Image (cartoon, rainbow, N blue to C red; front, side, top):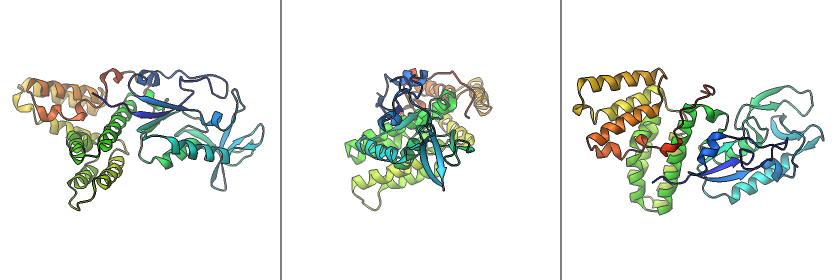
Length: 318
């Protein structure tokens, strides 16, 4: 049974026709998540009093200070957005991730036009939107993506793995029991090894709790290490080493041809010809065949609900 992650999502991604042009955006991946997650939709621009439809706004830097600006009315919206973001974040429950509108001056996590001043003719660079920047600052390490990048299979898969890892940790933390944290570390061993071996060892030291800290403090420390462990994409070599480690638990029972097939598949993954999920399903099949309970307990082999595995891939955003 998978926990339901809590995701803050841009309201225009299929929840309300609240874009500046009065439209909504159909995001197939967001739509597919609705049965599996708890969404908290928000439109920061509407929340600060801008209508629908509305004149476009801009993200701008003025003396290295970020601002929101509406060129047609010359309104500076910075203070209103700061106040809204602060109040909104204060009311949120524990959040496992964000899916925000790409290239939006308020919500875009990246690839947003950031103008070099308030002039209508100012040049621009690429950066993050104002609300997204506030969210990243308030929730460091929490998975945040836009619907455009999530059209890429690899980025989508990694987002889901991180999302459900945080949701499971939130569930363990809510119990307040040390044994649940020990179980979390145990079942996430291969996943953390693949993502960041150094941080995996750091997480293990926190769980060992040689300092005899109170349980609440141990969970808080583990949370910080977990966010650091999953903050960056796993290196290809690290993931392959982890897959080989998992394969070692079942390889003795396989024929020569079966071993050769797995190694060929591993090379296809290395060359990005097949997705990670194909290797994970293969290893899980071996684990089921040989009743390998250790491997079957590892969330890396079944990190998120199977219906969310979609092989469509934009090819962009890698």
